[in-house]
Length: 252
Image (cartoon, rainbow, N blue to C red; front, side, top):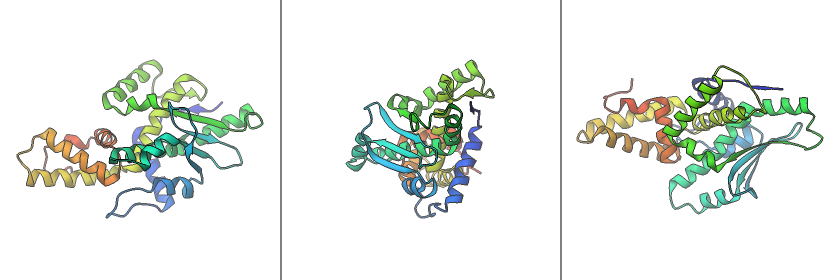
């Protein structure tokens, strides 16, 4: 049975950027909004059902099928919210859900396919499904996310492998997909460069602002620039330690 191994977050960033590079879909410097749908359908060769009839507590799922397209399904209610969005964060939330599923395809697709080959599930049922639940939203809150990571490490050890059907495997895959989805929508180097420019501009043109106020301004602008929610932008900045440099003239 396949093993869900520890992948350093920095390596996940590099893996996602490598996939973007291979796809040829890098956003332009004038428009940093990554076309995640195009990436999923054209590069990952996955189907996308944006109007899936999923349970209310399921945001999205991936069906891995040997010899057929992987299919990503997004809760129809979430798609309706995105299409009727009154705020950018609602669009960002939908985009992050798709990006999260893309990361599962890249990082965990081979594991599910290997499991299927070993378990013989290709005959009944015809696919292996990985679901992502709304209750996982709290993992996008930085303090909760860090606490759960520490708890996971204390229980199982980051460097230990865990079989794909074990409970801790799912938690590890969710951590990895959260990081991978963020890396697709907000690539590390581009995010750091953008944050540096914004911090420098505020330092020079709004020196009266407190450090926390500058951070909030930068997070807000990054969310708009990459079309993600402010929550996702803040967590990405924290993960990359961009906000540590809010009180400096330059990040580099």
